[in-house]
Image 1 (cartoon, rainbow, N blue to C red):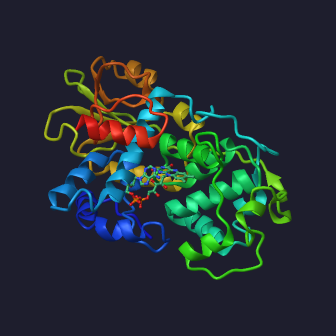
Image 2: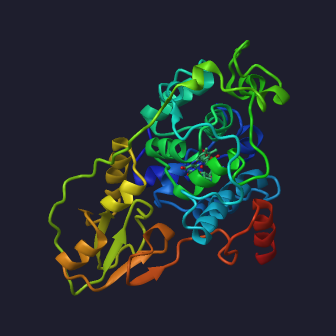
Image 3: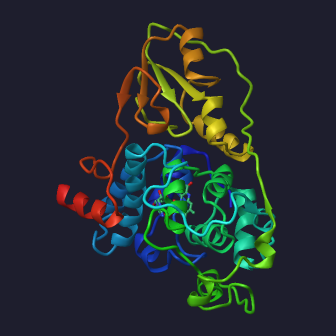
Length: 362
Ligand SMILES: Cc1cc2nc3c(=O)[nH]c(=O)nc-3n(C[C@H](O)[C@H](O)[C@H](O)COP(=O)(O)OP(=O)(O)OC[C@H]3O[C@@H](n4cnc5c(N)ncnc54)[C@H](O)[C@@H]3O)c2cc1C
């Protein structure tokens, strides 16, 4: 699985989504999912763009509601992060219960859990930077609810490898699985995994009923844990050419939009701040992906350093950037991101509340 980095090809992928088959089979590992999240998370395209595109193709909104709702989940999590900017460290609703360690099972990291669908998906994540949503749920459940690890380090581990690494979707989902953002923990047993992954395993430690799974001790294969340290290898800092008579558009890990102020005369800087990546580390594969995607933005220059240093070094007074809670320290003109439902703002305790409010606002 190779993710294109060419903007035209990315737009073509939006056109190729079949939201009807998606609704029928999205939970199956070989289902027709869009694989657009790396582009949405990197801010190359927006959920609104995808939403508008499928509706413009004439699909009946009721018939494709399952797809539209998944897009809205993403915006819902983004609103949650705006309202709760510390959710990568702090529980949203409840303390995670039944925690026995703050590390990660060694055999999960090594993709040697003995559950084939999970091991294959982890190996594939390391290579491709993508994992199907249903396996993300399986993995997260195995980590937090079966191996009883605190959710923080493992969510960082998954984020590190994902091309679609997104603090909001990642943290909200991990917290949802372990019962910190929902009223109960999520479990999947072998029967469920076999059904959606197309495997045929039996007599595994997950081949038990849901009553047993929720009360069983940590399986031997998951007992040994490891601590992990993540590091982001940023490109070397190089010198920029800045025309201070023109405003500077700031791009970052969450905004690589090639059509933002397209054809206007601005300086364009992709700012990769070490302080950001110390907090939210990503793999070399992800940084390469970002560098390649940035080539869709004409005359963009990459600055690996802190915002304050960029400002001082080049005497820049006029910045323009897109709103994002992880970059609240930027100063200048803040522009809105694209939202499917621009009038639905703030924290909603459930997606159901968010969806209903959005439909009322429409
Ligand atoms: C433990 C866990 C960790 C996750 N971490 C991330 C993450 O770091 N970054 C990330 O973008 N997503 C994350 N997700 C959400 C989801 O798994 C991915 O967005 C989805 O798998 C992306 O694949 P796709 O583009 O093929 O999605 P599709 O199923 O084709 O959906 C279309 C679009 O809708 C949005 N979407 C779909 N499902 C979800 C969802 N459950 N939550 C939020 N948005 C959704 C995405 O923008 C996606 O591109 C996580 C989910 C779990 C369970």
